[in-house]
Image (cartoon, rainbow, N blue to C red; front, side, top):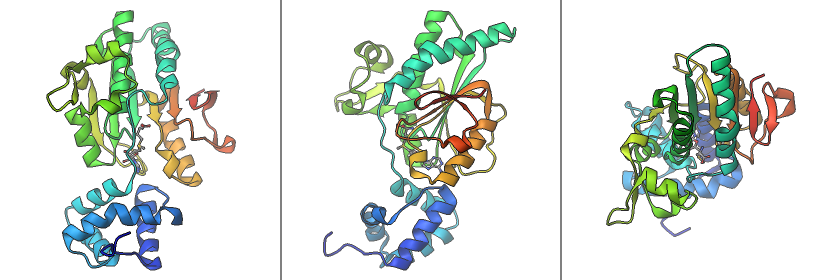
Length: 281
Ligand SMILES: C[S@@+](CC[C@H](N)C(=O)[O-])C[C@H]1O[C@@H](n2cnc3c(N)ncnc32)[C@H](O)[C@@H]1O
């Protein structure tokens, strides 16, 4: 750290990490201290805050709530890329979607598959879902409105990037060449790719804190993706979140979690299908 870096005291770190845990469920252990100091340094400098206490007092009293949003944008991790953990997308296309369409047909109901990407970051995950869904719709002669996609995150900056739908080449590394042609416009002079509007318009992006007790949804979901989000939560937070997801999953609906995440067997209310894939029994 440079000479000009503002350090953090034990008390300040305890206050800030306690606040992040209570409000957002994110556990900041001592090993994250240096990272947090680095991530907040620029804000402290630009805002002219002499120390972390001054900064924290400001964010919790600032009336619009904007300062808290900027703070959580900086503190949380947004790393993501297209077709991350690709076997989930293959499983969704080859098993989950056909199973769900059949379920609707068996019961005589119109197909109305609702997918939710919870913790979607800057949009690479829901756009990957949307590409697979579009392929599935075309192959199975469904209507685009038969399958809808909601994508939520706590981070306003990430959601703005998701809505802008503009991405740099490295994040497209795992997009199959055919999909790149079909779903992205040719790179602009700055080398960036843009998701074509017809695909972008298939996704509804909304801000949502997953720590809320109830979610403002009118219906339940057939598929929930919550990948690489719970990794930052502790066990009690994870298990109450899984309980909420269960409430918002339709019968026989699916839950996809990150491959490095796990649901403890004692709190497992979904049926285990395969690593990181669960179904509501
Ligand atoms: C590492 S990204 C994962 C993105 C994507 N799901 C993936 O697997 O590539 C984690 C995201 O979870 C979001 N997040 C963390 N805590 C949250 C909360 N309490 N409510 C909503 N989103 C949250 C962060 O803002 C971040 O964008």
